[in-house]
Amino acid sequence: MKALLLENIHPAAVARLESAGIEVDLRKAAMSEDELVHALPGIDLLGIRSNTTITPRVLASAPDLLAVGCFCIGTNQVDLEEAARRTVAVFNAPYSNTRSVVELVIGEIIVLARRLVEKTIRMHDGIWDKSAAGSHEIRGRTLGIVGYGNIGSQLSVVAEAVGLRVIFYDVTDRLAHGNARRMPTMEALLGEADVVSLHVDGRPGNAGFFGAEHFDLMKPRSLFINAARGMVVDTEALRERILSGHIAGAALDVFPIEPKAQGDTFESPLRGLDNVILTPHVGGSTQEAQEEIGRFVAGKLASYVTDGSTALSVNLPTVAAPPADTVRLALLHVNIPGVLAEINRVLAEIQANVLAQSLATRGEQGYVVTDVSAPLEQAAIDRLRSMPHTLRMRHLHT
Image 1 (tube, rainbow, N blue to C red):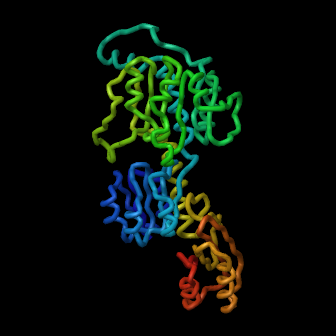
Image 2 (image 1 turned 90 degrees about the horizontal axis):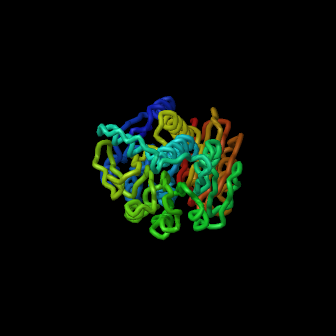
Image 3 (image 1 turned 45 degrees about the horizontal axis):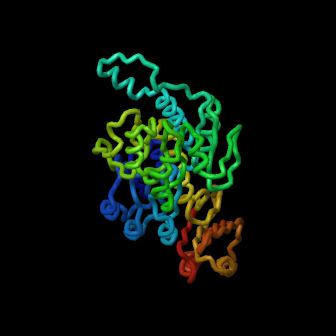
């Protein structure tokens, strides 16, 4: 089997896949749609981060592709419905870099509150500017978290530990951590917070989520942070509020348009503004996080191709199949009544002894993993593959 890993994924991923007998091609940069179309024939596994987009055209050009691993939190760069339709499993790392993002946000809050960006620039220019003007402690200030999922809730805990009061808003009913207080509306949060930090996901409906009207509702001289998704913020509107002084400072780690490769030119209307921190999408880019993500996602890919496990897949029915040393059949099928009975009828006719069987369904698809005690004749495998409702059948541990 062959795997193509893009965007400089951590070597831990290479080691994990190679230990499963998979040949790995590691590339530093992302690929365009055209490049992917030419590169994917013959590739069984694809590993990407946030700068590679998997479109229906890309998937149509990859008949051998079994799975895509997103070595990051988000999966909005992959057309999940089309991947499922083409029986391509998609995996991600929903928790592995949470702490890294939280620490970056806490650091940015302190740096912005103390206006250290301007101080360090002036020191490098040889200017000694020892002044407390505009510099504040964060203790006792109010942090407003918009989006209280894995990252937002952990940020809440760490923020309280350094003395911040925490309020949050989420469209989903979330349990408050510590002394955090849930706000009834985002508008109520914006009017009370000294610092607003966004932690919403990248679903298409969140494009333009935070715009001019939201910045205008924020407290005068408050701070703004976006370490979520670039397309959720109107950066032109943010620029205007920083220049007017309404927003005292901002930190952004994600942008609507990001360079594809290391060293490419970065353009943004926020460049050159005072007390604005711009970082190149490194919220989860610590050595610890990238190593853990590499191990985690590569492990999911390896488990899928060797054992048929779809545990934590974001688009296929999830069956947590344990490692097996018996003959295993992994069959993805149309989700209609009677398919399991049809599978077992074929196995019964050839007197195959079923040791274990797991079934899960998701939307229009079902997934059955079956362990049998002895090798199957090719005729039986062909019958299962050719059943009218079979979408993909793999014969494992033969």
